[in-house]
Amino acid sequence: MAAFAKLTEAERERLEMLAEEASEVIKAVTKILRHGYYSTNPHKPEDGDNRQQLTREIIDFQAIVRRMEEHGEISLYGSIHKLNDVWLRKLPFTHHQPGDVWPEADARRQRERKERAK
Ligand SMILES: [Mg+2]
Image (cartoon, rainbow, N blue to C red; front, side, top):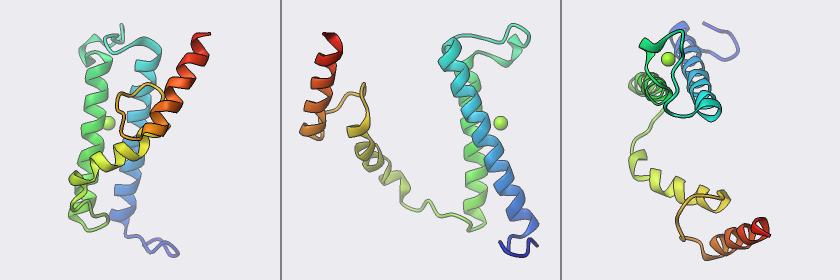
């Protein structure tokens, strides 16, 4: 057991796995940003396109999250109902997402769009 953090080896390993999968999600996202959703690795076409890669990595990440929840390390109880609230909280800080939930944020986005169009 890690002394200060008081983690069991299993807990530490799940955290390592979570970090690893998070990095793989990031890698898949950067591939899409660079090459697009439909691009494939010419050296590994059997891996599918970038959209499939991202989907697989998100599922891998979710698998670790679920196991951590089963072990009581995190609790996502009721979180499915919070997903929309999280999105709505983030929306005012976006520039290209549809939704007029907060009129002042929408007005700001419209002003910024007009400024860019000049
Ligand atoms: Mg993975």
